[in-house]
Length: 462
Image (cartoon, rainbow, N blue to C red; front, side):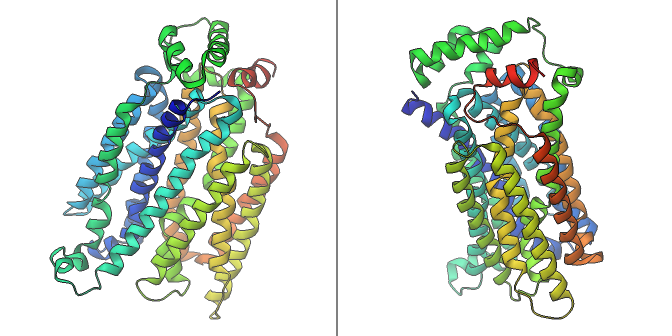
């Protein structure tokens, strides 16, 4: 049994995804104006976008051990403060350096949320609902991305209206400042919401606070399920009697190499197919594909983010019914197909002919990603690693994932300028094909099994 209080706690934690998606995506619209404002080169533009991911990479690596030491909830509170401060600094930026500082601060918050939120949700959710509950976090994330694109589109439209109060807001010249500064509002609201959630029960158990862990589990799931879960957690922790924090060399132990390899393959694949390059530069991509006018690329970007939301809802409904393995394999195959279509569309448009394949191809790509690699990766990572090393392992895989994302975003403007859209998206498509082959060979099914059962089958019996 899962109580309304438990659902409420999970939803509050999952709202961190909305904050992450909203704050992280505001720059997608602002990037067009920032480039002109500071007269950026292609490399400087790539660095402005990817610096956010660079600090997120560092944060992801540190957030897991930090979450083990001070708690998942505390890490989320620190991340929320980072979002709020970064929004203020970005809106007040008077130069390129100050803008980079704001991007780096925001990235620190992104990395912390990426690790702490799914970990917390997985640790408080019952096995039958765990996949769905972790996916709720991803749903809020993509909804935050959608809200950011709507916010940017509205600002672009408002600046063209002749009302006096809009003129006083100086939207025409400071539109990007408004786009970035609005991020302080959800950060402040979420910081208040975090006052109403307890710490993760498994974190309490990890630190020997079994009474606190039992109290939270009873409120969440009732006495019977709480005692069963606490017994499983205690048995898992007793199996490894060491009391010191998990260390990096432990992840390379023979019994963990299999699950670590699975996590790394999925982590690299999620980013090497170019999803954050597409979402980070969407208005510029559509402008290059021939969508003229200042509003058209923002409309197309909003459409992509809407598809992202709808597809994530579908994934939410399917993940605990269909399973992780089918969604990942068939979704990645769909990603490959849609990227091939987008590449062909760019080939036709770059040859001087009109092509209608770029937008459908990218819409299909985002839809397939949101059905598979987007939400399922974080569910899988929260399941396959043992209790003792889960935080550290997710941080390490997240570090690799974020590093690939950083490199993809950094080189994307150069790729589009020197290779063109056709070759750029063809490369992404080929990576997706390779990913399908690897996933079909190594991926286990984790649906409906407790975290301790998965530890027994994937680690101790490997």
